[in-house]
Image 1 (cartoon, rainbow, N blue to C red):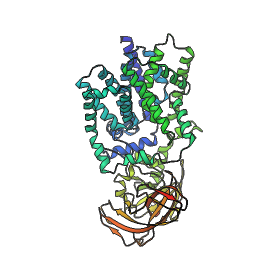
Image 2 (image 1 turned 45 degrees about the horizontal axis):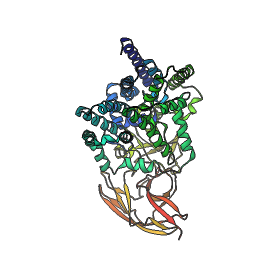
Image 3 (image 1 turned 90 degrees about the horizontal axis):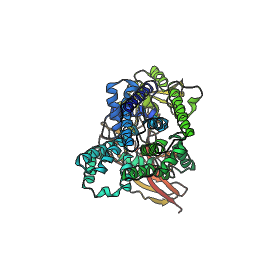
Image 4 (image 1 turned 120 degrees about the vertical axis):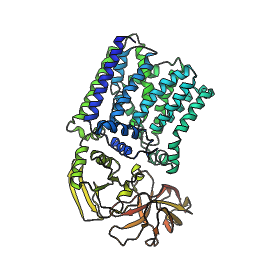
Amino acid sequence: MSDRSTRTLFYFLLIWLAVNLIQSIFSELHYDETYYWVFSQFLDWGYYDHPPMVALFIKMGSFLMPGALGVRFFSVVSNIAAIYILWKIAKTYVNNLPLFILLYSSMLILHVYSFITTPDTPLFFFTVLFFFVLRKYLDADRLDYALILGLIAASMLYSKYHAILVFAFTIVAHWKLLKRPSFWLIAGLATVLFLPHILWQVSNGYPSIEYHLFDRTAREYRFSFTTDFLLSQLLIVGPLTGIFLYYYVYRQKTPDVFLRILKVNCFGFLLFFFLSSFKSRIEAHWTLLAFIPFFILAYLYLARLPQIPVWFKRLLYANIGLIVLIRIILIFPVPGLSRIKGLKQFWGKETFAKQLHDVIGDERLIMDNGFQEISNYNFVNQTVKGFAYNTRYYRKTQYDYWPIEDSLRNQQAYFASFKRHNETSQQDSIETNRGRLYLTYIDSVRTYQKVAISVKNMEKRVGAGTLQRVDLEVYNPYADTISFSNAGKWKCFIEYGFTQQIYDQGNFTEIPGDYRHVRIPPGETATLSTTLRMPEVPDDYRLIFSIRTTPFAGSRNSKKIPITIVNN
C-alpha cells in the first residue's frame, strides 16, 4: 500500500474514531446497553440471555472511562480494529481504498455497531478476525494458525451463540476442513476454553437454552414476522442502495474456497433467519454477521466493474447523508420523532431516572415493566439497588439470578409501576416524561422470585375440564426460612394458570388446599399435594405455577409445562 493510501486509511480511521467517541459521549445509552452495564457489575461465566463477553467489554471500558463512554469505549476501539482487518482482507483481492471507505460508510448496520455496545459488538470484531485468520489457515495448514483460530472461536462463543452458525456454514462451504487434524485441534481448544460457560449453564439449569429455544419462540405466527424481516434486511444495508447491493453480492463469483465460505455464510445467515421468521419475530440485527461477508463480496463486485455507475455512487452518498442525519438526531432529538420506536429509546431516559431518584432518594426500588427502565435507573444513578420484578406474564431475565432480590427481601423499598396497584390504596403518583408512575412504599418486601416449583405425578394428556391430583415440590434457595402464612400485611398466594403464547396472560387460580402452615428452611424442599382443574377448551397449553405476593402481580416460579387437553 502506498504512502498516500496509508495516510488516507489513517485519516479515515481517525475521523471514524472521533465521530464514534463523540456519539458515545452525547447519545444516551440504549435500554439494552444499560442492562449489559448491570451485567458488568456482576461478572460471571454466563448470563440468562447471553455469554459474558459484553460484560467484560463494559467492565474494562468503565475502568478507563466514566459514564456512557466507558460502556462504549471498547466497542468503538474494537470497531476501528475490525475495519482495518476488513481492509486487509479486501485489498488482497482488489486495492481500491476510496471505494472501500465509501461503501463501508454507506451501510447503516455498520454504523450502528460502531459505537453501541451489545453482545453483537464483540462478536462482530472476533468474526472479522476469524475470517482474516481463516483465509491464512486455508492457504497454509499451520499449527500457529490453528491455535489462534481456536482462541478466536472461543472468543466468538463467549460473545454470542450466533457464532455457532458461522462455524456451521464454514464447514458446509468447505467440508474438507473436517479431514484436517488441525481442524479438530481448533474445535477441541475452543470447546475447552468455552467449558466454564458450559458448566455455568449446567449448574443453573440451562437457562439460555430454555430462553432461546422455547420461551423466546413460543408465540403465534404472524405474516408480518416474515415481511418485517425482509424489509428490515433491505433497510439496514441502506434504504437507497440495499436492493442493488444484494444483487451485486449475488452476482459476485467465488473462484476460491475463501470467497465461497464468505458467500455461504452470507446467504446461509439470511436464509436461516428468513426460515426462523415463520416461527417467531426476528430482530433486524440478528443477521449482523451476514454483512461481514456481504460487505466484502459487494466491494469486490463493484471494484472489478470497469466503472461504477454515477447514479449508484450518488445513492451511496445520499445513504451516507441520511445516516449522518440520524446520528445527529440521536444527539439532538427532533420534536415529533420521539414517537418512533427505534429512536425514542435514545432520548429522555436520563431525565426519567434522575426524576425518580429525586423522589425516592437512595431507597431500594422495584419495577415491574421488564428489565429496561430499571436497568436505565441503575446505570444513570450508578447503583444496583434497582430490581426488575419479572411477572408471570413476562419472561425471566438476568435479574432473576442476581443477588439483588436477596438484598431487598424483608427490607424497605419502593415499588414503581406505570399501572396502578389495585391491591393497595397507599400509593402516590408522579408525572414523568414516560407517563404517570405509581409509587407504593413497602415496609418489608416479600418476594419469592427464585423459589422453584416442579410438579410430579401429572399426566400430560388429559380431558377437558377434568380434575388432576398432583404433587408440587417447592424448593427454597434463599438463606432464610420462607413461609406462606398470611398473618402479616403483605399477603401470599400460590397460583396456577394455563397459557398458550409467550405473553398470553392466561387466568391464574389459587391452588386448593391448606398450605399456610408450610415453612421451608434454607436449601430444602417441601411437597404440597393439590388438585388442578384443566381448561375447558381442548388445545395445547403451557401450565405455569406462580407465587403472588401483594402488591405484585405474581412471579413465574416454574417452567412452562406442556400439557394437551382433549375432549372427554
